[in-house]
Length: 405
Ligand SMILES: Cc1cc2nc3c(=O)[nH]c(=O)nc-3n(C[C@H](O)[C@H](O)[C@H](O)COP(=O)(O)OP(=O)(O)OC[C@H]3O[C@@H](n4cnc5c(N)ncnc54)[C@H](O)[C@@H]3O)c2cc1C
Image (cartoon, rainbow, N blue to C red; front, side, top):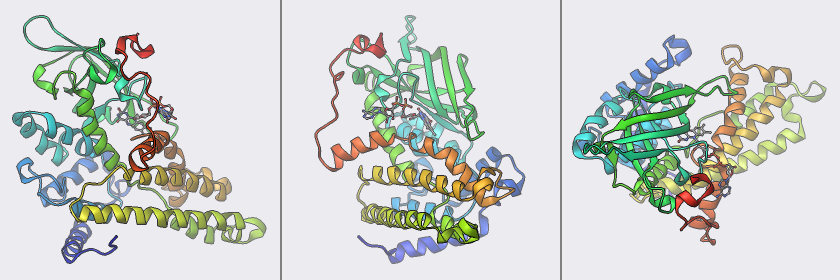
């Protein structure tokens, strides 16, 4: 493991920092812009300067940088209160899938506007019948019998982040219920404005509505919108999911350092600072140890990236630990703030608002991009080499499964 930047990496970090100091936008609340407008403008600015999609090859309109340069830029960017990243799903998951499976014309059509933030994409995988088990998708696509080769899609997706803002999406559908579930799937890209696609935002306990139900009623798509071969949708979805696990590895939110500072200033028992409370000191010590372990694991992954090696399933560790820690930290902070813990507006009390919103968002973070249990299965099977999960439905035709009936 190597903790230091190489000379080249240090130069890149310095240039990125200088550019960010000169160009990073004001926080959305201060800039007075709608979040979507601010997010698109920031993406366009990064794209023009070669700081968007850093690893994309020049062929796709990217700067052709390295994975470690992307990590360095993201680390530096995280120090600024930049607008919400509405392009994360498109650029992190959908476009890599398009690039791996679409024809040349489609790639050239979609890559540049997505990189500039002109087109927003969403990922239409989860359904009411299952999210962890993506292969249990029930949304059907049937070929139209008129010689056109077109398909008609019917069904429902759920938890689709950003669908209400999206121009395009990638959707996994069942094209053959007569074969086992992993074998009868096919992936398509869809235009979210097509007739028959209805998006209904879901109201969340945090007050936001970031994700949606998406209904497909007789949506007609061209065969040229297919990504990968008919029946090979599972293989295609693995490319998306692998990129998803990479994208959600590092979560942003208040950490133990902010809690330590707050505990110094917040009155606790007997009017003494909360930091004198043994229970808080014990928790802080635990979080410090966890964070240090996480940082070392991350450094190990970064060292591998820096040497040009691919990141492995160990990344799942970072996602489990950081999501769980955010939830525990936020819970402890809100309790420590006592009656002020319920203040959710960062404009009134910045720190209280941040922890409050972390508390309400953290349960979702433990589910999105693979639940704790699913990630533990991945670590057990692929990192520790333990025997695989029991899969009783592996060779059964989908139509004979409870979800397929
Ligand atoms: C913030 C957020 C954003 C999201 N964005 C999107 C999106 O943009 N697009 C999209 O398609 N989906 C999205 N999702 C959905 C997400 O992918 C699913 O919620 C997730 O995969 C879990 O699926 P589920 O909710 O159907 O739960 P289920 O899969 O039904 O799981 C229920 C419980 O059973 C456990 N479980 C399931 N299978 C196993 C197993 N084999 N072993 C042990 N335990 C198991 C799970 O861990 C969980 O506790 C999002 C979710 C969240 C919270």
